[in-house]
Length: 593
Image (cartoon, rainbow, N blue to C red; front, top):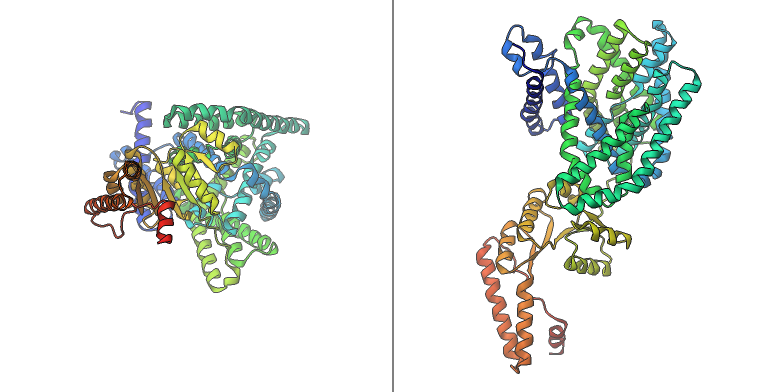
């Protein structure tokens, strides 16, 4: 008996999450891109993999998904979430600085590849409309796969990453007019009206965002409840996507604009941390969906035609992009890597083909073949990306003059907790010309400080996603000045798990807390109550008439006693605990002596 719809949907969810949870860690252990793993999971659990064997083994119905369409909404949400995260990384200022790349190389790639693929299709006599639709779909490249590959290889900040990202971004911008063009069977005036509505929608999102985003996230941050902050992020993302979708634009354009607007706020890093788990999961669902649509049986029915079409389209695109980038004076390795990242058609190609089919421009066997070629090309896109990365690495090793520019290491200090102690530390760093970035969980304080030009962002640093967003691997040190001992211990543990060699200086409550922090792995722990108590004792003893010599001796003895206590509690400590803090008066006495 068939399961009810709700149970069937739950079963599909369990299959997707279970397969991803088992297979993806295995691929990570083998140092293989998780993109490949997700697609293979989709092939395995889809209707053309194990799902095709349910007639012979009915129990397989419990571990497979028979209809890929059930994952389509989640797959589209994954693409939207990717573009949203992309916008958070960009910001409008960065986009303005990249405008020459985006609107220079981007149009050249799209136009040149569309013309070349169209010319290759002309001998088949498909008609101008069908040829144009297929050429446009084939010229697009996978932003989801490409950015995932760049991130995994650590090349997002390199010349390769910037170049590929600029072309991906232009393609994503161009999706809207392409879909409008294919779906418009009316006169040019109707097309112009659609474009006008799209521009008005984008303008409306920008205006409303400028007015409401900061107050919305300020109120969410004041509650100090992560689920409300996440809810606010999703409201902005889905609202913007729905607004652009309502006027005929791609929802991913709205998601990108929402990310760009939020990138200008002080809540950017906390938003990144909040949506990071959903971004990875939904993007994985999208890749599983791609694998499920891959009909290996249909490939085997006419392998020559399908393989020839895949090779032809990838070779045409890779060749054209290589030529364009070499003419733009990109290094050979960079040009090869970007060309192979862009070689395969994309998830948006599937959307374009769907729009062309709905408009009657392509149909029947041609539409089926186009979907099959696109799906197979997208499935091998991660392998092409790995090949491109290998070529660039070998080319750079053989010719150091053509190596991609290294990622700039900022070397700043991260101050977590920006109350009185954190601000005093920041002022001393400023005095010595040392850059820093502060993180604080008080949204009102963050807002005031940012208006004063202080480099501070809002966030709850106890969340591992926020620590990852702070790029601690590029920091020179972390200073922890938060009040709560439990929160401080959690922070030290999280930082040490990810960055065992990073300098971590922490504010401790007392000697016992300092001992615990040393056991957790801090570089230095400064117990605030110990020093203040000793200085108070010194002052009162001197004021009571006790000679300075015995007072200083007793203070030193007490420090030595506390230091020994800490060393006993933290036997692995390799250096003396920092308890002594000489005052200027003491330093002057030493110099005078």
